[in-house]
Image 1 (cartoon, rainbow, N blue to C red):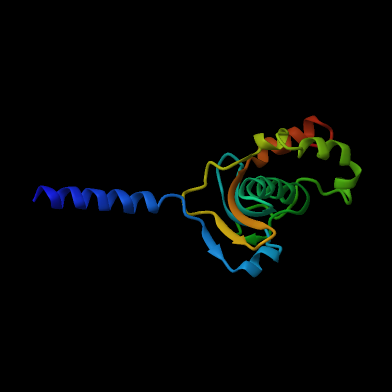
Image 2 (image 1 turned 90 degrees about the vertical axis):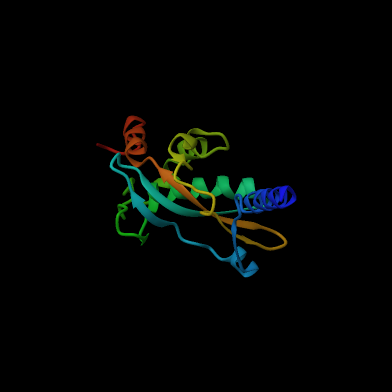
Amino acid sequence: MKKYGIFIAAFLLLVSVSSCRKDTVISSQGAFYSFETECLGTELDGSQTVRAWGAGSNKADAVEQARKNALRDVIFKGVTAGSSGCSSRPLILEVNAQEKYEFYFNKFFADGGEYEKYATSEDENKTSRIKAKNSTQTNYGVVVRVKRAELRQRLIDDNIIKP
C-alpha cells in the first residue's frame, strides 16, 4: 500500500511539473506571418490588455519585441482588432509623428529603455503565450498590459502631444 502511495505521489509530481509554462505552438509558416495586435480588454485605471506579437532569434528577443510592438501600436496606430473595449484611436494623431520625433522614440524604445514602465506582463498567465517558430526566427504572441493613461501623461509632459 505504501508503494502505491509513493508511486501516485511521484506520478502527480511528474504531471504537475510537465504542465508548467507550456507555450501554444502553431505552424512553422506562422513564423513568417505578421500578426496584428488585438485588444483583450481594458481596466478601470485606463490601461489596456492586448495580445501583441514579436519576432526574434530567440524567445527573450521575441517577447521584448512584442512588448515594444504593443506600445508602438497604442501610440501610433491604435488597436482595432479583438474586443471593442480598447480605444481604437492612437495616442498621437499627427501624421508621420514617428519620423518627426525619431530621436525621442529611438531612446524611448531602446533595450532597457523607458518603454518598460508602460508595458507590463502582469495579466499574463501560464498558457497565454503563443509560439510560431521555424529555423531562422521565433514569433511569440504575448499578453501585455499597456498603461495608456500614464503613457499619455508622459507624452504630454515631454511635449510630444498636447493635452
